[in-house]
Image (cartoon, rainbow, N blue to C red; front, top):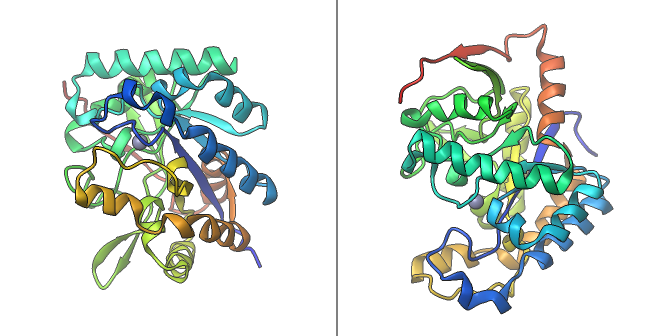
Length: 293
Ligand SMILES: [Zn+2]
């Protein structure tokens, strides 16, 4: 039986080679995005779920028909940057230029304003919070780029885990941090990706229940290649290749179980629903920050 909390189902749309050092020209014949997206569309349709597909600009440029098909089925289209470069590696001008490039292409292909964004690697950090103001200036209303704990080079420790509005000098933006679960004082990622492939399904189930008990939705994410056992692994080191292969054969089965046990919708609908429920509770708050250049 499904729970009443509406969780966000998001897909970071990139092919297996985006974000790697692999030279794209060598893998033209190995494009696999169509496989993963088609499978996801079938699974979402079977469960009557509308999701948010956050497209990398490069992936949209290479697959315009596929993007139009996703949009025509009623799913929300968001932006995942252009190049898959971490935001915290860019300066303000570079970030604004490449995000504008991606948003323009996505708007042209869908005929709609794009209002949802997620940074590659969840790479809006404490030092790059200025990016939120740039996103507001580009018309973004919902951001899901912050990992509210330390995560390698990224993450913001002790960042609020609830959906909340952030005021910038250019206006406000709704932040939807990636979900984590506190177990014995440790922050356990709950949101998907490699952890979803790695965990037995029961662990994910318990994590979802734990987040639900706090009255919050889970912001779940997955990549199309995580459902594709035939994706190539060339030019990856042993550790990276092993990490990317883990659990790939069971992802489809686990995903179907998740969709049967919990309710999902798009990022923007989950934010609107959460704000509506939270108007009389302290869950939704506002914070401000001064921009740094
Ligand atoms: Zn990505």
